[in-house]
Image (cartoon, rainbow, N blue to C red; front, side, top):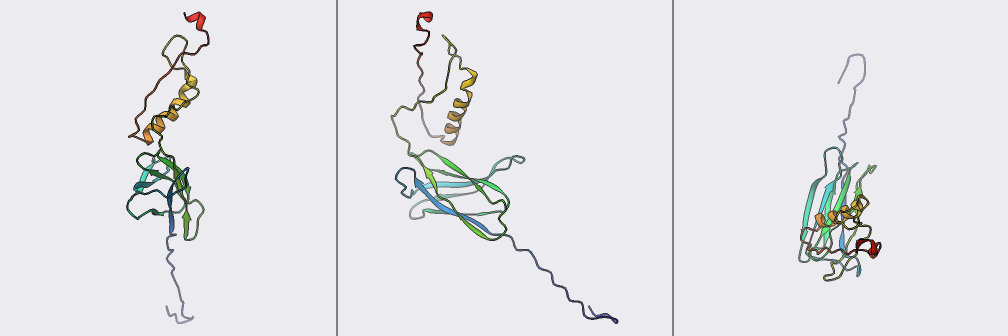
Length: 171
């Protein structure tokens, strides 16, 4: 702008560019560390107010083995990987405090489901001479429920036995 009593005023407006954050990595077998193929990877936001929601999902098949997702700054995410005959796994990812463009490299590991092998879940207790599960067993059972939610195709058989403790009283 040109004014009679002064100089030319020069202004410049700079538009802030969004911070580009890329998450990329591989899904590997937990034991052998080999790269796995034919699987699904997704990213969920972790928002305790609005609730968690899936932001992006990729199916990796054939020769495509690396996942890649665009993430927003100042957010918390959960990276989830699943594959048939493997337990689903997730890891926490945070972009909190990242102010410049960045590439986050994270590999995620899956454990193979071993069939026909007994797994003992400790700390499940019943009332004596009853089928009632005690309150202190809730944490162990909640972890089992989460495994089943994360792995909806998993088929399990549950069995229990009576302890030898207090046997003479119960007979």
